[in-house]
Image (cartoon, rainbow, N blue to C red; front, top):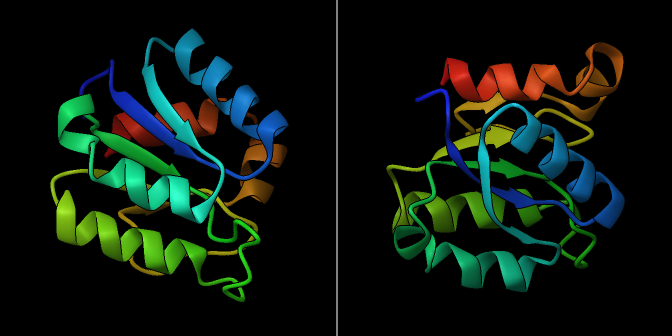
Length: 122
């Protein structure tokens, strides 16, 4: 991935989403959008081409009532509609099927630079 990736953040916590965005921008990435609900995320996937999204950070549970399946549902939409977009799981637990998994516990332990490095490593 280029050192200046175009990133879309899918995270239900406004505070965490804002923190992720700030830290990614400080690391010279561009945040092109955010979604906090499964409906907003699915709608946004359809615009990934227009937004030139290269990487998505994906929370696995947006508390939609889908019993923790939000990430799977969104990931399936990404794979179908924007297969060129790389995905980083950023959740409380590991997320099967993403290109790279960086749990929230790891980010808390090692710092936000882990996420920026993960984008560069893709």
